[in-house]
Length: 478
Image 1 (cartoon, one colour):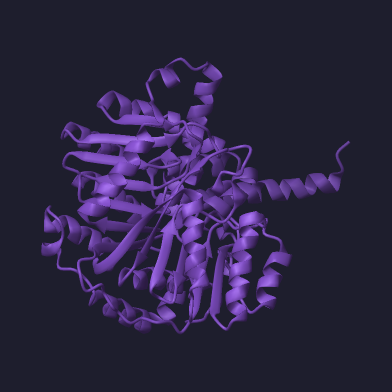
Image 2 (cartoon, helix red, strand yellow):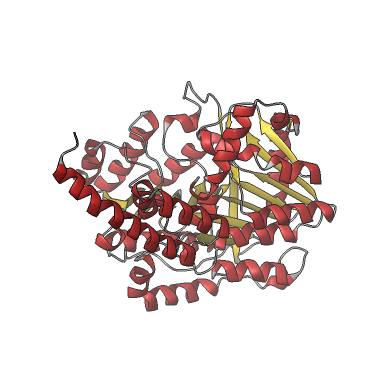
């Protein structure tokens, strides 16, 4: 028989939990961004508060607490830095073809104008990326800023560690920021060895104090290396052997970074400083001088985005980019779980006669995201959006090509997590030469794809279709 004391406890606990569920459901209705999300949370919190309450504490938030206040503590200095960087901006009238208003929207989303006088080099796949990053670190004279979502203690991870240690021992100031969730498996020994050598290694703490202890649903997904304020490396690769194609599970790994030098590097550096200040309370002394290339140079916009933004910066970036396309829009992403506004923008682009192509991986690394992507085929393929699956290994690059004058390389995926929950960074290039290089690269990638057809989902089993729809319901946290 059930103990009477237990029955007494349950008689009190059950009504309390249901009462909390109702109160929290009201909060969800008032705060959740989408009507679908609000209804789903409210229903779960009222009917199953025992399960839904702890889940809501972790996954129900849509804003990152504390970061904005931390930034405001150094607000005047940050504002002055932004103002000085703006001096290196390029008049939109000098940008390649197109409507000046198009570039102006990107400026306002980034809170920073396009910077003139930069050089840029596409880095295709892991070897080229790490060769460039390691050469940059080896050549550092004053400081290195390194930030990654995932760092593994494997062959490439130890090479990365060794180079940071070597520079720190030579008196170069080395700051290393890693996401505490993405790099949860990184051994304490790895970090201790860095710190013992003088490297300032810190986690990006999503749950820094009691007020935000449940913010583990947010991730700092940025991958940045800055050397002496003059060179920066940004893109899709984390630090791990799988990113060099050494994983038996994934095989070849298709990814892209970009190396830049010039004034835009300072804007990348500013993004790092924001994150470093949140995590440590410190404002590092760095080089902020602007020295644009005297001859030519590319126009680059640096666009950090994240859950602290007042607008959904990443979503609006994609929507505006899609709406700006006149004849070509090519996108690559490892995940396709987009916002409804992005689906609508893609449909309208096709109706305008734009060649819309989206390249996705053929094999999954995250099953729920992979399953959810099938549910969007009916929203894209019948309207003329061309979808492709990359066959030659795992596709992880995050690339956007618009017409023949705009291209972006960054860390943001086309999924709800990148659009709303992750801290991301995107570099947008208004340069015909760079766009041509990206087009050539993507043409080679499309040659390694097969087109997606409606049969990919229509001919699947009923259990698979059910799994696809369940995965789509979880889209807000994928």
